[in-house]
Image (cartoon, rainbow, N blue to C red; front, side, top):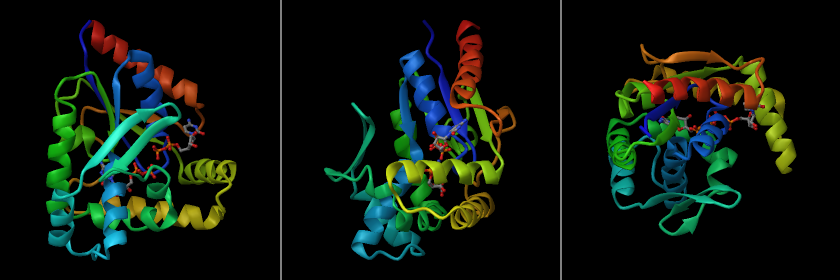
Length: 224
Ligand code: CDP
Ligand code: CDP
């Protein structure tokens, strides 16, 4: 059967990775979380005391850093230079610095190169901010996931509480809004909907409904 590439973009906590993982599982495709790659570099920069405003130093750090995304029994596992950073890259300090790191052209060029190499064989579901516009402009299916900021903050808040992570809903909402602003206003590959992307507002949709809608669209493309 024909294998297509699926690009899923959208703002923070819109449900991209949850949907992407489900769709990949159902189609037996490979899921690639590009946010985890930017988070990994941010983690490494903070560990090494590299200034998040210094694009040249960040790119040099990235060139010598190996980032591996692997699927484990309990979901995706992320290794940076052999260290399991799966939990660490979701911590607040990383989350609140990642947009600064990801705005640099030098960093993005190297990341895009790596992401395109990973997607070469097809059968990929990739999520991020610039997948439909920059990384996989020829993807057969592009989805732009949205949800109101209140709903997105609620979702992350619930997720934090379920994991036993201290969480303040109002702060979370402010941080999400700030990250969306930085990601949307940056000069290089800002967060925006590709012209040929299908927009899906998930504010009132459950996880399964979102995944089913994407699967329906994917199956149409596969059959074409
Ligand atoms: O899961 P969440 O929506 O919180 O974020 P993520 O997908 O893990 O992405 C973390 C950050 O990485 C984003 O806020 C962007 O600054 C950056 N990113 C990007 O610039 N381009 C991508 N393709 C993916 C992520
Ligand atoms: O990848 P992204 O940051 O866009 O979002 P996510 O990590 O997939 O989803 C954020 C949270 O919202 C997770 O805890 C999901 O389980 C939850 N979610 C939801 O409650 N309803 C949806 N329709 C989608 C996601």
